Image (cartoon, rainbow, N blue to C red):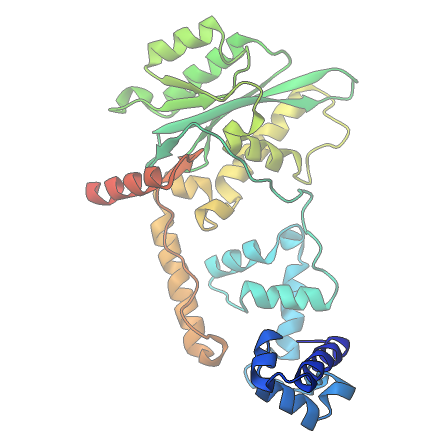
Length: 360
């Protein structure tokens, strides 16, 4: 929409050009408007009142949400279990319970009307990452990512150390340990325990293990254990923190959880208890936004196809009850395919996806 002052300026320039001998139609085209628009502005007092469309009164659509539905949406969004979650996670959770109230955009509009559109968690907006090394996982057990992060304590300058291994395909935490010191022996112990828990000896092909260039993860004893297990190591670029983005994102999720102590842990036992609770929550309860909001454990066990199919049926039934509220197809609940770590080019993803389809 063109403001009143801009309208008057355009019309004045067109009138000056017309008075100088220019034809109106070409003059309007040069100004970026049509002759019919100029005629309408002059005939309907558009040069004195401006555009009145924003002030027009519009009737409420017949399929709009009722006051009761809006109140129920607000009440659900403010329940303790949803207090730190955005509509993008609330709606799939309700769909798993066989409940559909409204779409995420409707939830967002209701929350906006009540001044509740601020970020509902503690994390900040994610940053885009760029990295050169590419690994593609089309099933669990193909690519693992691992790293170590610091956990604060009550003593300034003293830290606990969280060692963690994630399966790239499912995002499941397949191994973790928390120690009071940063030593290569802890990484070796974690490798052995994870290989045993995931049945590495029975896998026809051993996974690739991607990590950073930290001295602990590249120690001689760690490399020897990787060689003995048949795991191929992969490393990020030196001094580039976002080459291992999936694990870094997981660490951010952990440290912005409401139960993470802002003043640090009082003891190693307390840190390990927190780690056990967080890993269970992340694997079993957390609906991951990168997995169509199924949990990593469900994805790791291959249950995501059935869950997403059930959600699709719930949406179809909701559309049948209120067809006027749907302008097209329902939400896309098709399962996520292959996962790429640090994609370099589109052909890598296409080739991997094609190989996965041909292998089915």
